[in-house]
Length: 244
Ligand SMILES: Nc1ncnc2c1ncn2[C@@H]1O[C@H](COP(=O)(O)OP(=O)(O)OP(=O)(O)O)[C@@H](O)[C@H]1O
Image (cartoon, rainbow, N blue to C red; front, top):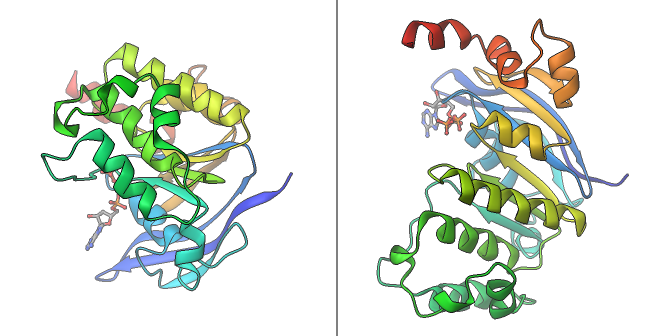
């Protein structure tokens, strides 16, 4: 299997406190990798350093054989990104946003074809702010796919979606995986991680506390359900009980 992403010993510190501490991971082509952990565990920091939007203090990062800091422009022709708090101007329509995005790349997918494939071609003239949550997330996936990427980064893609919309997004991601796309995602939903990810990495306070498959995570914990195992790894279980 071809290694698409390789991170070795990545460290990023804010005011002396490491937000990412000696992180090493590897993602093979056509697989789905899930980076998980509690709020503040360091997921966004790791992703931003991987994409070169933040500079790591130390460590090596290679995506599609490129260094994201040195070859950012070239890399972004091959990588699709959807960030957690992407803000678009309020009055922009779906069509305008797709066109602006497509214009950023040498070789772009036809947005109309993608909109049709994901069932929102009828929303072309709709303003992005007027889309439902599920339609907006589908649009964000489409925007990430416009550069015809070999790998996509999806940060908390299904947050705020209802159960049906989440399932729709899962189906889309499964189809994309079948088509050979490599997917790197973060999520706070363990059912989603269990359903989609071939390999996971659990972060706690910037450090990797588990790396492997969901089944391995369950097997190495005292629990039989993945969410219980995750809470056990991250010590969130007590907190959850206290909150009940
Ligand atoms: N620019 C910054 N300056 C100082 N501290 C920061 C900065 N960015 C992040 N941090 C800190 O680094 C730690 C990791 O934050 P990060 O956003 O990477 O976590 P996360 O796992 O993505 O969290 P969430 O699930 O809430 O999105 C947190 O303690 C956060 O407060």
